[in-house]
Image (tube, rainbow, N blue to C red; front, side, top):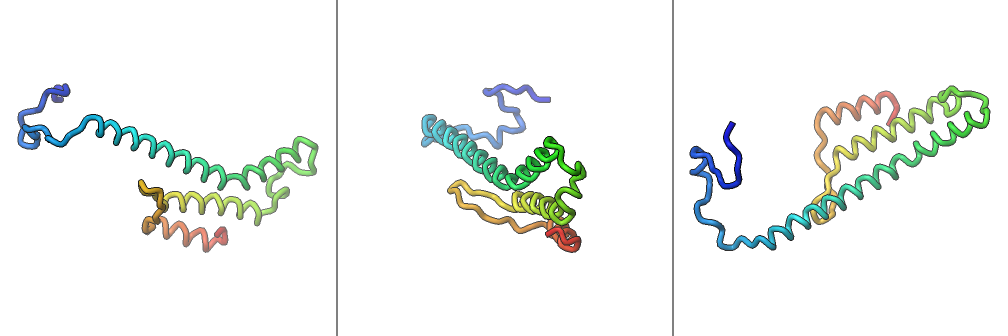
Length: 135
C-alpha cells in the first residue's frame, strides 16, 4: 500500500498530476461551493424524510387505531379480523409502491425531480404485485 500524505505523489501517477496549479483556482470559492453542496444535500435529505413520513401516515394511523382497540379491550387481537384482508393488502401495496417510486425518483440540484427509467427487475416486481391484486 502506498504512503498517503497530501504532498506525496506516487511516481507512476506523475503523468496524471498537474505540475502547474490552476491559475483561476480560488480557495474561498472552493469552500463556498463545498458549503453550498452540503447545505443542498441536507435540504434534500429533509425533503425525502418529510415525504417518507407523509407516505407512512396512513399506516401509522391504522396501527394506532389497532393498538388503541387492543388497549381498550377490543373484540380481537388478530389484525386480519380487525382490518380485513383487503385493507391490509391495500396498506402493504401502498408501502411497496412508495418504495418503488422512491427508487425511481431522483432530484436534481435545481430542486426539479425527474424519473429514472425503471429496471427490468422493478418492472417484474410491479407486474408480480399487479397480478396478485396488491396494486
